[in-house]
Amino acid sequence: MMRWLRRILIGLLIGVPILLVAAYWYERPLLLTGTGYAAHNACAVEFVAGRDDPTEDLPPNPLVPYLRSERVEGDGVEASILGVFAKQRAWYTPGFGCTLADERPDLGTATEVSATGNPFADAPAPEPDPAVEAAVARAFGDDLSEADREDLGTRAVLVVRGGELVAERYADGFDADTPQLGWSMTKSVTNLLLGRLVVEGVVGLEDDDLRPEWDDERADITITELGQMTSGLEWDEAYDLGTPITQMLYREPDMAGYVASQPAAHPPGTDQQYSSGSTTLLCSILGEAAGVSADLPREQLFAPLGLSSAVLEPDAVGTPVCSSYMWATPRDWATVGQFALQGGEWNGERLLPYGWMTDSTIAVDVPTDADGYATGWWANERPDGSLVETELPADAYFAEGHDGQWIVVVPSSDLVVVRLGFSPEVDDVKVVELAAELIALPGD
Image (cartoon, rainbow, N blue to C red; front, side):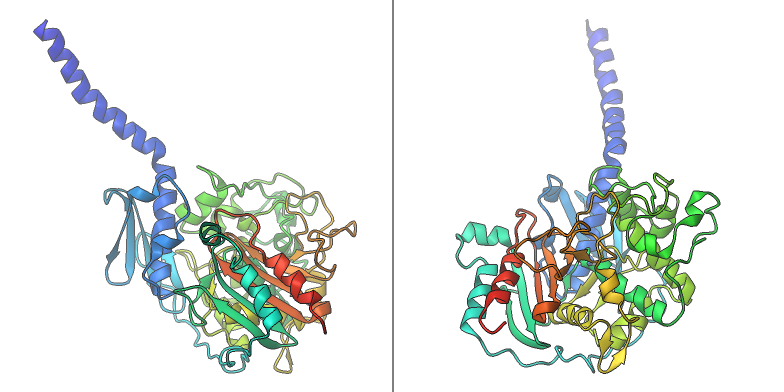
């Protein structure tokens, strides 16, 4: 009997650790996604946004109570599970923000960006208009219960009409100088960056043979098709274990190389699939054509527009993560919207090709999983003439990002609305309602 019990005990002593190790390695990809998110978030919230509450930007997730973050080497952050497992590091570089990498990346020198020429940077606080202020208050959820208002999570609302800042409001802990993450609004900024390189003759929209390893049907993919997400590359944008988007953002040092390795699922130009991979790959190709990598957005776009707060974070090889990782103050996000509204003219200088914004905001007419997606922007008018947001006019278009980030541009009303926040628990962040109210105000 004792021998039998001894064998069971030995078996447990050997078997349980093996099972635990096996379970850890099975779950490790999921854990690395969590720690990668946490490391990047903690680094950027502190060093880019200048805040001390990174846990406020962690989405609801069962892993959150087990995540631990600590400083390493002064301006790096290491995140782990319980301080032991699935460690990931993010490193801060001035001008370039935070980058997930095992070791500190060498990203070169960041172009200096001055706010000179940006009329919103030092504009005085707008005089309150009661009707506009009431509409903005509803966008902040002032008419909701405290719990619903907290779920709504609005952190900033700005209204620009006729090129003038007419309203701005911030949540507690945020102000005009607090950079906020735009998530996929970065894709719309990438469209502007592409336009800069087109007007300078660095790239053409029909350029193909974009990657040397593409010796099959992928060689036919064009710049336009990457911008419109019609490249046909296999992709899955779902934020789940083992999907391409989580693999790209949290486990790949060379994000564009990973995207380029995806096989063709459709002939180019025949199907539209929402893909953060396409936009990040596009930025890699633009950088190679221009001979600039991490500094490309600063050199070509941020400096000419005076976006002095803007940071577009790169991956470990220096490619700007143009799908997801631009930070800027709300006023600088409003500058992006106003520049688009003005069709690419800024301070009397044409920075984008004639007709660029008109062409970029025409929804692509192919089968799609992205209703109204155009070229980096979301159009309000579908190819069949119906409206995505029926409360807004056909000429409206949008930059949209995860967790409720929006820029609404309405040329017919000379209107730009910026809404920023943290809203993982709600679908309607009230920005469309706000824009519709502003359009309907007397005199507009």
